[in-house]
Image (cartoon, rainbow, N blue to C red; front, side, top):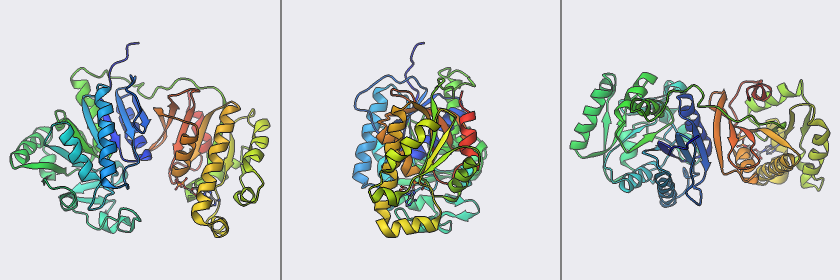
Length: 424
Ligand code: ADP
């Protein structure tokens, strides 16, 4: 099969958000790959869209700009034709950035002078109306996001929020225009541009709006937004004959081998999922206090796992109730307990893969990051969705692993068991 250069190059400001975007693109017919950080060398990627996942949301703006420009340079060298800067659908940022400064620098690098800004994701309750971001029925600044530890969002007016982050002019494409469709939006872009606007917040309250916005953005070198606004882009490429219609964009190779669930999330959803799996499958509860006291839980887990893993998926977990977590944190310190939990599960992952495990579900955002790092994974091909926002993926480097990385609150109670049934 000939490898075509990817069409859409995306830069995500965090890991799970990048997966969410890649998953969205796959569901709309673009074969997608997520790369973890900027690869050192240019390489051919067999995909219609590439998402480079950075961890740039809460780092100093200058570093976020540098990393994003590196990612852009890599994506351009890989042949991408259009670029997408993905941030959170709650517009997580401060007056110092990083959304504004990164978008500004990407425009400069592309010799462009206009982009749209649309974090709307109606499917997840994020809508933008008269430039104001709503989370469900609440304004952003009354949604709980005003208390975020790193990026407290105390203003829902995105025109104002972004204007504090950039020097250039910020404008608005209001809902009345968006509702009239792509042609009207394009006209509004022209008008705003003529008025010297560089960033246009675009209202959107439904998926039909996002499709119209996507169509209107066909000729923009750069778009910025949450993953919602990406749903309109694949059709642009199909319309131009660059992308074939397919219902197999989520195809993954068949991956045989033993299966394991590694759970480090202590969220309510994950606790329920652990209990549910324990009803039918064997589980090993990792004792972090014992480990800290010298009873190596990696060795203990492996001795337990090796005879079990021939019988079907096994479960290894630090997941515990809030009270139990508090006890451990009191004894070890919160950060040390967290780091220890991640390290133990990451080491177990490495040893399990060495022993032949090839299909792995990881629960927990930070835990997933630790496991992916320890396994030396450089990229993931995005496969079929298990539950909203959580696809199966296949690692790009050898040995090929099937990985499902679930952040805390995602997934139905039977997620761990049903996940393996969704693999080819
Ligand atoms: P989530 O996506 O639910 O936030 P994360 O993996 O991001 O899950 O975070 C969970 C954190 O809690 C990790 O740092 C993990 O090591 C830590 N942790 C897991 N189990 C325990 C436990 N029993 N006691 C204390 N900390 C724990």
